[in-house]
Amino acid sequence: MKLGRTVVALVITFTAMAVHAADYPAPQSGTFVVKDFQFKSGEKLPEVKLHYYTLGTPQKDSGGKVRNAVLILHGTGGTGRQFLTPNFGGVLFGPGQLLDATKYFIILPDNVGHGESSKPSDGLHMRFPHYEYDDMIELQYRLLTQGLGVDHLRLVMGTSMGGMHSWLWAEQHPDFMDAAMPLASQPVEIAGRNRIMRRMVIDAIRTDPGWNNGEYKQQPHGLAAALDVLLLMGSAPLRMQKEEPTREQADKFLEDFIVSRMKTTDANDMLYYFDASRNYNPEPQLEKITAPLTAVNSADDMINPPELKIIDRDIQRVKNGKYVLLPITDQTRGHGTHSWPAIWGSHLADLLQRSQH
Image: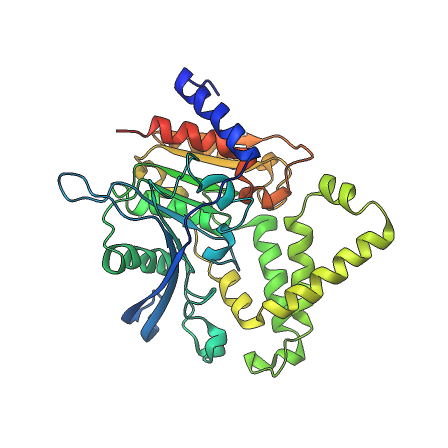
């Protein structure tokens, strides 16, 4: 990738800042309620709660349009809070950093089915509407426009599922943003090993007698099997070999992971958020994307393996699109590389530079 002098300067500045991650303004949290929402399935809820975090304040241009809003979308099973960490927010949101929260209005939603937003585990269990990605995009759009008064985005960016949402945002609302950055994703129907992985997760829960059609009293054992699948697919062998170099360390890591995640994961919620990808497929309409877009994947991502060459082909259909494949290093973390901007921040700097008006 060829970078101009300005972008190179940004990259150098970013690298220096990443070493000394600065503090960022305290996030604010809130909940927006969407009344009488009808999902694509035809199911309805009298109200959908959408929880979110924000940093900074919106700034409007002379025409009254918000110009500094940044929407960052979490992955499957995550929440907006996952970005309020030293390795993410500490590298991006501090003074002088790429998404300085004193300059940008940063919006971190909990998607429906996740976090403190409406979800099956609130009480409806398997009677909760079977949402899909298009429903999630629509609810995000309503949060922005009706809840927060945001009518334009400087940037939409997301990790994993949030990366897939970023593709959909750029396609469904092409004039709404200046730039898009999908991380750890593909702009194609969920099929092949990716779909098989999701079915394995879903089937591990549904075939467990303890699941009881969602009416369990304690988390079914099948949830642990589902977490095993996710750990394998989302991890990086090079890093795990380095951090767990003995049998005892590897065993302890797995045991601690399962114990920890079983306490914070609900089986019904997991069923729903993996099933939500069932109709995802932005590939037929990629030509609708007009905003500058940079897609970033890592070569050790087993969920989006580079040998598929799907994104290499599809990015050619995106008018202002770029694709970056990060090489495997002892810093990359497989699929989870998406949450470490110290690794890919230079490409965000480039995108912000080339999407300036």
